[in-house]
Image (cartoon, rainbow, N blue to C red; front, side):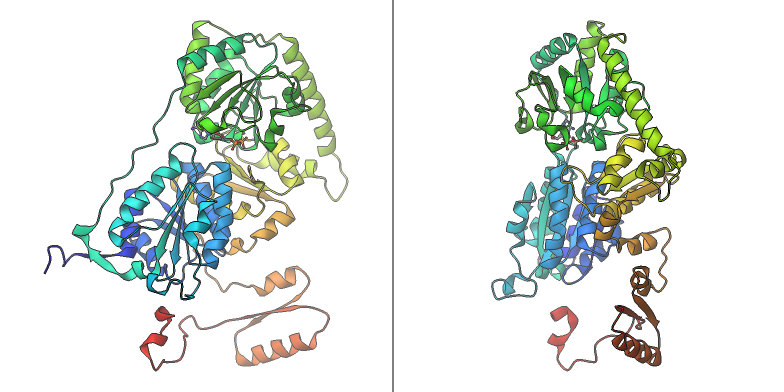
Length: 537
Ligand code: ADP
């Protein structure tokens, strides 16, 4: 017998152990053939697995873990349709620059091209939606491919990665000694900006008449809150957070000019762009929303981003947290502080006052049904300061953003760069899992428009069963139908089933939903041939 032959390890175990070696903590998904054993093996390794109702929501959840923790969450999906459902989550993560690792089961290799169950060109399909998409060439290669995927997801501009695991890998085994194990990848390297570019930026900023800092979610992801807070306080600069940049510096800081957003963008002559893109969210940095000759000092970790839409006055390529320290050092040497008695500050304050007054006038209206401002005004007064706010919808998200306050970084999750609806409940589940492990007192509040809620509303079932609640009552799906005016039946006996079905068929006015309780242990009848068992599908 070859050395190590007595120490076999399965493909499922190799995947799970490799994820654990890369410090992966959370996995979301829907199990089925061929990846059931991967979920079991992951749980055996101490990875928290959350079974969801749709791969799309599972993938949104995994991506939010990446943003909140800086370590990718894993989304585990079955082949074909399961993987395709997850593509929305991959695209959303990639567009938001959030780390994510999707692992998809795929057809057994010896059935490929024969029309196998749920066969699909998954590695190719994921290429458009990810930074890295690959299938390990053998079981032995699984750990090193997983290391590469995790590393790619967090190095440089973060994003989504995909690993394909053929069904026949899952339960085959190899000798542990033949496996190419990989240690945990190093933390992402932190790069400083070129010192000449820093000096150039400082000289542009010191000559500004109407300076403005824009704080984006790249700065939140980079945990730049300390250095940015120092920059705001030390230099007395007005700042404007993007939607998910809210909370890097608290919204109630006196230098926050969010209430005068349009004016601030329109009249600023120098803008320091910290981890935000000049895309649709910032009106491309172009007139009529910006001055045609606005000077942009752009700080980004991605070289290709620099200069998009507007030629910058200074390009600071590097990690926003340390680049802000570089700026602070130079500005500190010159003891520079922007004057608090400038016309710019007067204009901004006047505009903020006007806008806050008109929002308040709407908030105190007594008419029913309530308007958005009244609703958010009341929510705002009750929310704990450290709660994570998840928000999506059109007016719900846009107006909610202006009224609801964030006091801490990475405490707001919304439709993001891709404007994706349906992310809310998945994000909330992820945030609740992370909060439970890091700060159990923290609350997660999901503020959703009706339409947005509808995209993934069934994830309320996941929410009710997520630890520590572990509620698993008979789910009353029939109440979903009655909630919308249809008829719901809860059925436990053959007589009830017959009655409900007869009544439903007879009722031509209303749709019906019959929720039938089935013994969880019931299965197919005994099969004559071993190849008819479920695992041989
Ligand atoms: P927002 O939606 O808040 O406007 P975007 O998602 O458009 O923000 O932009 C985030 C930017 O932050 C991206 O261009 C990304 O490359 C950049 N980024 C991500 N991480 C870092 C980091 N650690 N340092 C600097 N820039 C970063």
